[in-house]
Image 1 (tube, one colour):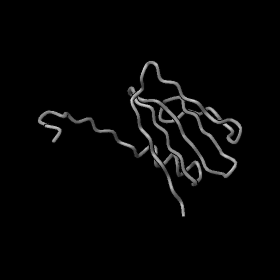
Image 2 (spheres, rainbow, N blue to C red):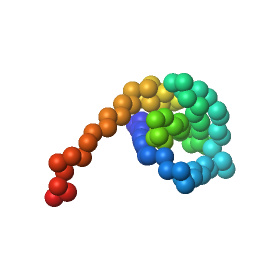
Image 3 (cartoon, rainbow, N blue to C red):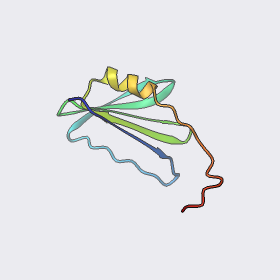
Length: 88
């Protein structure tokens, strides 16, 4: 069946990101007003990478890019306070 992995991480000023270009073809595109990178792997899986609001987003899956874009548009990030968290 179809699957998709989502990764969201804060951007660090010393952060570097490596991309495999031996088995993946990359294309620049615009996604929701942001520059993005679309990767197509030899196994026909797709990757979408973009940055927004200090976060780096990556969606990777074995579905077509139109489905990846639909999923990406549906991502909502809600920041909450850890106030009151005792760590226990």
